Image (cartoon, rainbow, N blue to C red; front, side, top):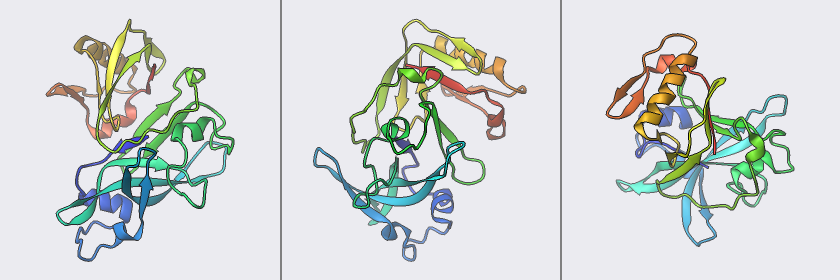
Length: 235
């Protein structure tokens, strides 16, 4: 499971991850301090910068996790690239990406989570928040284990959605296909399906918010996102 970051290292990234906002690479030692190597089954090796994190599960003990950002040499120095992965230390000899994240969350006997409906989020700063819902309203549809697949470049996948849920309302499209990017930053679907979905979102908001379209992309003000209903899909 990978999340998209910026293709460069802006001050906001350093402030949220390394605790500083001064991007003077002649003095910054954060990347070299936590740099690790990972080799996939196909022989490819990538460099990762490990950032300690925790997984909060309701009514369970806090679990340690690791965020691994791929490092690439840019302008003669290593910088965090666009791909950020989530791993759990289960083996002292290999602290990153030992098993597929979804398997560890919903099938692994270590008990990270007893339910197959899981929500993950990353935070950087006071307001940034993104969520990924695993299992959705029908967690029994999950079938594991999953085969590990390295994701070291940006890409897109097309999914066949059986149903889309906005809060308590549901829309059951007939053969709706949606496209997700590598970091689930964007969901692309036919214009009519998108319009219907936005209509459901507007009907489910806690207060009136401005949902506008800009260059084919729906946008809202950051301060209004807490009022949006939960959106989930069944594949």
